Length: 254
Ligand SMILES: C[S@@+](CC[C@H](N)C(=O)[O-])C[C@H]1O[C@@H](n2cnc3c(N)ncnc32)[C@H](O)[C@@H]1O
Image 1 (spheres, protein in one colour):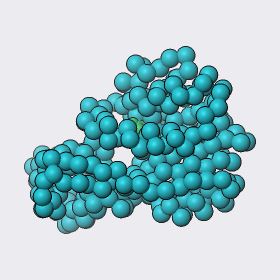
Image 2 (tube, helix red, strand yellow; image 1 turned 90 degrees about the vertical axis):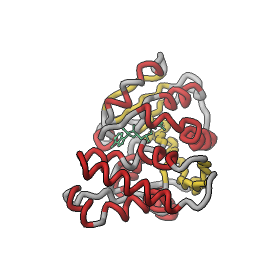
Image 3 (cartoon, rainbow, N blue to C red; image 1 turned 135 degrees about the horizontal axis):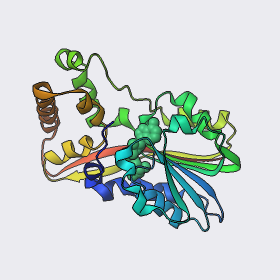
Image 4 (cartoon, rainbow, N blue to C red; image 1 turned 30 degrees about the vertical axis):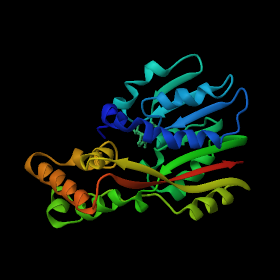
């Protein structure tokens, strides 16, 4: 998928806010061995490492575009490897802290994947994950409706990204069934306040829109972008608008 770090970074402070919330859920201890799944540019991996005394943090990501910026954030404690989450869980490597900010929504079959991710923890380890609640977010819903319409369905060869994100009670059940009795899971609204309509399009174009734009070309791609923008703008009755972006945050000890 063609990630673009510049587009992604346009909303840095809004995208960093949940990371800081996730950080508050972590038990800070010295000498932790940590993995950051879907680390992106590595900027937040480095911020994570800077809060953990004498830790070793590995950031992995499947996008070479995003990782191309990671060298600037590596140091003696922080390294990066180009690998998918699905490949990483198959390796026999264990960590004290498995961390992931805004990445696991890109991986499918969470009911199977979460136990595999938990399997990466050492005894006494901690999981800390933040996931955008795609099914609860209006822009994702507008996008999902649009791609199911005949003209775009045809252009996309019937391809559609179905959100793998579960309800928070389902995540709680998975954590419990896999050995955690000490967990904290909640859904939080991160208000995105935009003062021009184009900004909401720009927000989603840095993430959920990417796989669709990758699959479209030429005139149909232009039509698709225009129609998506029109539908977003039609939902907005006044400016500035508050877009209540929902995210799931979870922490569990094992
Ligand atoms: C929204 S960005 C978040 C990046 C970073 N964690 C942050 O908070 O800034 C999502 C990242 O997940 C990565 N990603 C998506 N699917 C992945 C997968 N299956 N395995 C590894 N990384 C993946 C993308 O390449 C992208 O860098």
